Image 1 (spheres, rainbow, N blue to C red):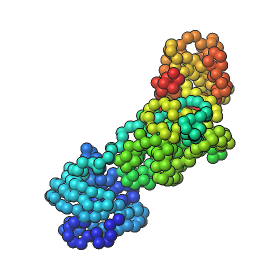
Image 2 (cartoon, rainbow, N blue to C red):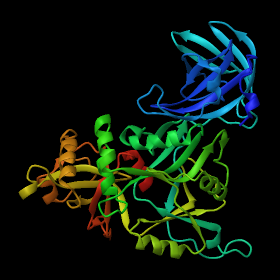
Image 3 (cartoon, rainbow, N blue to C red):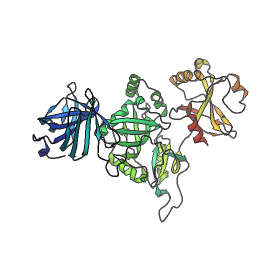
Image 4 (cartoon, one colour):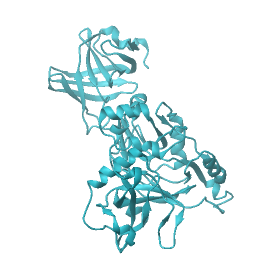
Length: 466
């Protein structure tokens, strides 16, 4: 931070930018002018990209002494929240009118020519007039997750004197929903594998944006929830996955809070990291120390993968993911450089129908009829009737009744006892089951329902199956 001598001296050449953690995070941009600090609130901070303007809302002028202010304004007072100086320095004024203010900034973090132009009322826009800094890249709008191939632990000999196993890192496999998180100007977007924006379902994840402040970052990770015993549980996460109504989402965030497990960093402050080897990306991620009430960065391990796999069993986790240390990030691609090794067998399935329940489940579904894509259409792979809570049964019953259709969506002829009382549905809903093994006739043996997969479509299942 510049020394105190850089504070306003009455020369109309000092600026200060204060990061203000009020009800909504923003940056207060203040220019010394005629004995006061003329001020704008910029919700997402100064733009680095000359192709994108940002909103700047003019606020009241502040006294020059406010340029040194760093403190917490008590809750309930105007502007309540933490204020800290993000940058300050001197500026050259090239133009100043009621409609346009053009300046050249000389700060520690802010350099170059900017123009503020009035758009109406208190609203202005701020535009960077200089080219973006050298080697700077804009944050990508969408990065689809890189996917792992199923397989076993790496083994055998690699190049040189290193064993193949030592060329890999090992992470725990988290039982949740895969999501890429984008943070820009303290604002958070969370995108699933099928390009759904779901931050409304997990409002507590917005807190990471405030914690990161001006850091611009794209993270890859998993959203997880804990069950009553404190273990990561896909079933517990089900209560959070379909909620869009804001008040309900906030209430559930208190009852079943989620955590974002960040295991990769894809972009950081103007640097695209997709072509950076995994080992270096993980080092960058570890240095960020992303640990908070609803986010964490778990460790990764090198060495003997069998030990990590055994530890995953002891912790009741799904398994491990082995990642080649030299691997680059390949968006949307299923790569052999990442290998998932599961302790339990799971399968993504498409719901093609249901059968009514009996006894205490008479008013809901008794079992779901499941399929996976095959060359000749949707192949029937069995039915599942266990693993449902009462809330899930009620929810599924309503969803499936809305999707009912006349004929079977499955290819081929189904067993008579299945056809007798089946209700057919349009095959658009995707779920996941845990099972023992595949039978010779390609049926799931002893399947148990694990939950819906709103992050997957029927087309995704087709790609994963073929």
